[in-house]
Image (cartoon, rainbow, N blue to C red):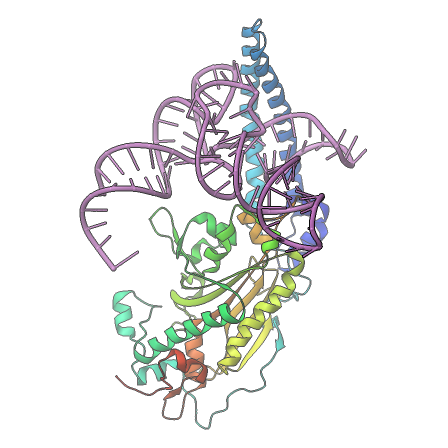
Length: 423
RNA sequence: GGAGAGAUGGCAGAGUGGUCGAAUGCACUGGUCUUGAAAACCAGCAAGGAUGCAAGUCCUUCCAGGGUUCGAAUCCCUGUCUCUCCGCCA
């Protein structure tokens, strides 16, 4: 949600960011709407003032009682109309504002699609195979690691049932990554609700615009979360944080649910794109001046995981055409998937600046000066487990299809070092 | 699912028609004291908005939405949520 005062102060900056995102500039329209709203508001407030003072006269001397009553009644009628008019204008304004994406960082490059993203860190070592590497589905089939027949019967397409050593690997990865985040990078571990109110999704930016990507239940209109970023970021909604408590860092494993409405036909098989997947998430609340550094710290945390797993990766800076709605600057981690002969995204680390905190009404207070302002929020996946499973299966496969499990994980797999059983 | 109670500032908790944006305590912020800290003491301390160079002035907000009234935190209706007890249940 944008601050109309900020737009008024620097409409060009605002419009330029929209243009960079291939959207139409609209500061003029917004400022105009706000001026109209202010006209109604000012008129409303001065009427309320006279109404209040008339009522107060009652406590002193009730002489022209009836006259005052009449006057107040007249004012109330006028107020009713004004209220409607003012409300209409502010709603109109807010509806537009809620559907506008965050202002981009100067660092975010211009671009039309993912092809214009910039590789900022390329992994030189892409695993070379002496045999032709299989994709994760073939490997999974060989060792009975994924049961699609049952998943289809139980839930339909884009669901899977992990079995045997793959299920163990899933659990191991989850624990390994949570340990990394909490022990080495000071994130506070949480277990969060996976059903949330619409207002929470509006706070992080999924609503109102991306309703079709979400699953809505008929229990109190709650939605399934598409990422635990939603639950974590909303932890401080409608409240004021003492700035001394910053930075605040949370991590959580959760299941994530996505309708994948616009992705029909894309990655239809396998763990790449499912309606439900596990993910460990990072969320940071930061002092605005520190958020750029915090983003680097978050990236370091994610990078640490991938390096320890010894997976070939690269980091790309998303261009203005590929970056998400709430973000101002995003770096994706992509891992080389030999079975698909390409890099695939496994993590996305974003600085959402004050975009989400405004929507969630999360504020900071400097108690020395009394100043109240908005923190920056950052989020990052660390990481999407389904895709990480693919990466491990495909990168560490042997000629006989067996898969070496990264050494760092063996303490989480009860000593299992290799997937080679066919149960 | 049955019965009852409730929703007030960061938290706890008073307030039942005007003098209430709201007592008190804790927390928080500043200060005194102290080598430093703690304790003690003194002081300050809700948010959002309009207007103004500023000081300030004004408006709104005591879960949400309606209603009664000249006037509502306070009375009435509806919704939501929470708690307690019983039942059921990971």
